[in-house]
Image (cartoon, rainbow, N blue to C red; front, side, top):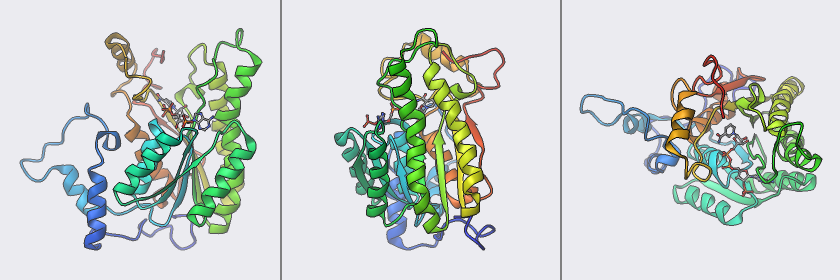
Length: 318
Ligand SMILES: NC(=O)c1ccc[n+]([C@@H]2O[C@H](COP(=O)([O-])OP(=O)(O)OC[C@H]3O[C@@H](n4cnc5c(N)ncnc54)[C@H](OP(=O)(O)O)[C@@H]3O)[C@@H](O)[C@H]2O)c1
């Protein structure tokens, strides 16, 4: 990664468009993973005058940007985490997929393996400190070390509420998965990253961490805390070549949550963004950047990946 001595000004990744036929085939297969990876039917098609489609042309010269990286992505059995794990594997990283649902985890691993990538599933419930520790140690064992951690999981099992109404149990359960577990996973990962001489931790926060909607007090507090945790890790671990950054997404469409999204609600949400609603591929693309050496000069930032919703005056997310 870029934080390695002597590599800051070198191109990231070791493979160019002149790589082997097999490597080219592998990348091409990943390029065909489908809309959940490549994004969004709403994105305008690029016109290029009847030549090869722009994406195909770009793929054929794309470099593998995470070759040699070993990554854990929490909450990668579904949603954004799933897209991040697939994107990392497509960029040459070996990945541990994790969550509580083994069936969905196996499906993600199968999808990556079928496209020629390297992935393992390790089950973990992040409510539990020891489970976080064991997840990281098992991941490092299977991958032969660890250089990337994405703290993406967020626990939606407890009922969030306003401060006036929230129970202590719900508060503690949400804080545990959304804030304390990222610290547990980071704490366990740092020795492996120090041993590797470099590392990147990406915390998936939320726009809610800075611009809250009512009724999400525990989530808002957890995400605001995560933003601070990022900066603490960034300053503490810089001497060891470990970077830490936050991504704060706006509204990202989610297959399960938004399966029945009413047209009026969707229109209202779209109206709160300057561009469009997000898709998981928007977040995974940013994760690849922050996890790879391309972002070697970037640490401690909070990337507002929100379609402009945070600067859209007078607009709030519902
Ligand atoms: N979607 C959005 O609009 C949006 C906006 C801003 C920020 N975000 C953030 O983006 C991240 C992902 O969101 P998403 O919408 O992709 O969520 P999602 O589809 O609900 O997926 C959540 C993931 O977290 C895992 N998870 C939940 N509780 C867990 C626990 N106790 N132990 C281990 N794994 C657990 C789930 O796996 P299992 O079910 O297998 O345990 C699942 O893989 C979250 O941090 C969220 O706050 C999302």
